[in-house]
Image 1: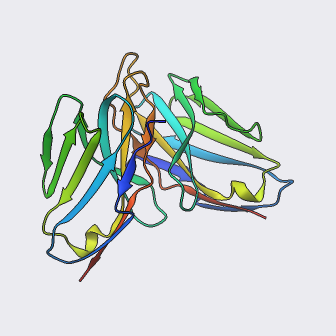
Image 2: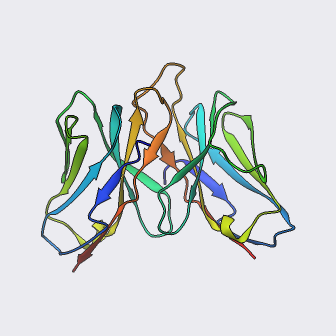
Length: 112
Length: 116
């Protein structure tokens, strides 16, 4: 399985602090994506990083990808209470177009 | 809103009931997906339809039966479910080009299913 595994499982920080979540996977990928899910709702796509990219930014989000270590990190800077959610990484394998394998997620709590 | 709607949002059913979940996307996409999300487990892909053809059945029990009448609509027919089937069922869609990868998926809000 190339299932992604997020670390930590849960993270609690103060508003204004940075939050870092990590994801590891097992097989070769086309891309890695990060999604956010508010409690009991659908997932919202945040950012996609291709296998030939090492870093990508979107607003307060910064994603890195290290294919040699099969790992990625998501950094949320200057966190806000509204960032409270679960964050999932998902990988698209090189032989698996359309098929995303999701990790178990990191539950982020940002305290006001 | 993501452009993907799901109905109903909540469903309670007995093990002998037959019910259907509906998903509709307004994004002009050609690929649609069903996922199951259980407590404390990763999101599980159930089915994939691309250009109305089923391209993935991830070893899903036959008590779950998908239907994709056109590229905008996806159904999940439920019959004789078990209590362990209680979960959040999420629908998603993506562009679905024939040779595509690098696709972003757009999710609906989900149907919370409870099987008694």
